[in-house]
Length: 116
Ligand code: AMP
Image (tube, rainbow, N blue to C red):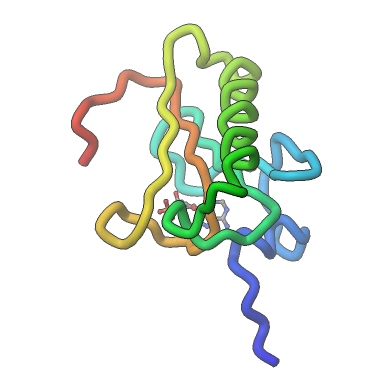
């Protein structure tokens, strides 16, 4: 059977190296390898949910946990005071390229709105 693991599942399973900054029983966070800000982390659930579109009511505690981890990491990375952005890109038009749910945490610079 073909290996259908996502790229992020391979990182979680330590088959591909990444700069991991946080791990717990529900998620892993690592530095984006093409950072769009001085701090750019991805908070990824161990469960390979493909996108926000696939999130159900049962996943609500997990999704909440991703945000709590992002908030703690913002503090750890020293961006909490100035401010930061959290983003789920959902689907092609939003720029999602990896079909494994991931919360972007971006900070360390002033950001514009609306996003591109
Ligand atoms: P998205 O476009 O929202 O699906 O986000 C995917 C993110 O994963 C992009 O910001 C990429 O730069 C990042 N990315 C892709 N491959 C890797 C990798 N091997 N290690 C860390 N980040 C990655």
